[in-house]
Amino acid sequence: MDHTKATQSIPDTVLNEVTTLQSFLREYANLPEKTSSAIYANLEGTKLGRKGSISIISLFVPSLGRVYHVDLISLGDAVLSTEPASGTSLKTILESPTIKKMFFDVRNDSDALFAHHQISLRGVVDIQLMELAARTYSRRYLTSLAKCVEGDDDVAPATKEHWRSVAQMFDLRRRSEQLSGRHILNSRPIDPLVLEFSKLRVVLLPHLWRVYSDKLRADNKHFWRAKITVETENRAKIARSARYDGDSKDNALGPWNWYGEALEDAIWTWNDALLDDIRTGDAETWPEYESVLFSKSEADSLSFCNGGC
Image (cartoon, rainbow, N blue to C red; front, side):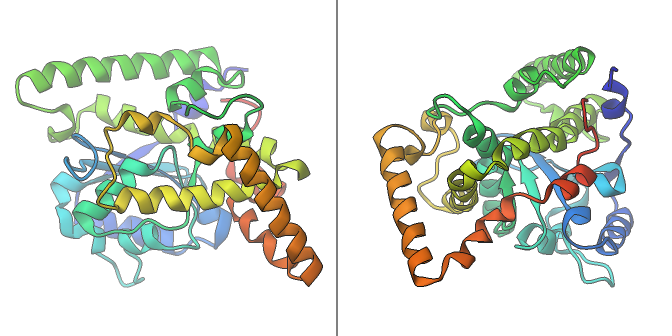
């Protein structure tokens, strides 16, 4: 069965007025806790990071069945702190440690949000790190979102072709407009191509999250679940630091202690710490790292494209 329609038919809404943003925030605030409030997020901007700007924040909330594009150019910088009577703002959502925000490579997103809006991301799960941890081969180099989609057998060929076509058209427009000093991301009203590109960056994330979660749920993956939780937090923090360079070639590498001799040392250290906690009776505190994964039943309710996309 071709599930392309399941992906492309997901509606999206542009939030470019304070009233529409507040309406979304009220609707979101009324959702139950945990899985139903999970968000799949992506930022787009010119030179995304401290040296550039944020144009659009795309949020896919599966339980609401819709992608929301927050138009920062139309709304202005102060909008991230805007809140309705519910007391929920985009800032409180992004900084909440209890609301799960799934990003694919959170580093430049974290850099941009902190540099331009003083927002410190918390409660993040980095799906790029989940893919890296779920591997059975070298973890030295990271994989791009495009390669994850292209390499997934459960994503229908038509979906991959649509993904590829939109990405190519977007890249061509972006390159041509940059030569003239313009940028497709900053044109208003938002170009339909930008909306489709931004939507595709988030609507397949639940499927990828489910694929890697299933692989990481095995008992022998405890170490890697712990590493994902710790490293995601490290990524977000490092991206906010003065030394972070979003353009560094080293950003293509996995965490330094996820491969080679450093990985062997990390595994020994982790095992020793776990054994010590078992001896002292503190082992029950270790399930804290399980927060990166939900139970299987919760995963079923979250992933909108079970069995294929």
